[in-house]
Image (cartoon, rainbow, N blue to C red; front, side, top):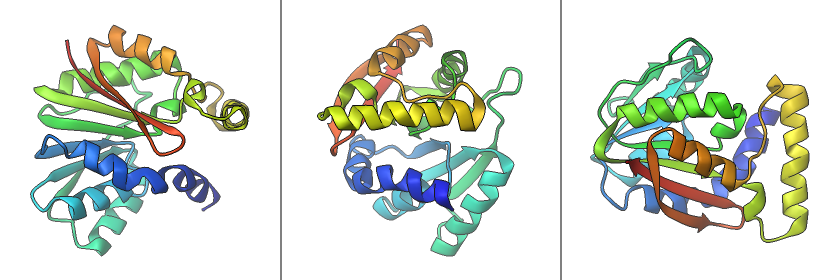
Length: 201
């Protein structure tokens, strides 16, 4: 409960603005990687009555998300795919017009992020895009905000899994390039967030 409240505190206020960006090219199939509680899948289904969304996460997380999606009345348009990103050679099914990751990649080490981005590059359609929304430490307007994010990194590293952290945008740009993707759009969203829109090279 505490984690969801903390996580949603940072993401909920920018969801509408982010949704407009996600749907600017009218994607028909979106993969929600790191589905969490299903909030993006529900919001996306409300935003577009023609989109099909596939939630991708661990089995336990998907159970929560699927229940929330069903309660919202969108079970017919939202599917799911179970994955463990720490397993050997994790892969996604092909066919996504857009792949969405919100405050997800900061849960992993750089090597693990590269594995995830390579899987996304293989799964997205040739003209599709991989969308990454993060609170980058080097994109904060106020020094206090940067300090809070860096302090949050200490929490992640020590209390979570030993290697996750809040990254500067430069690190993600490097990994995007190494994964065979190209950064096409770089936009600020709300007070704290940045969205990277990436396409296959």
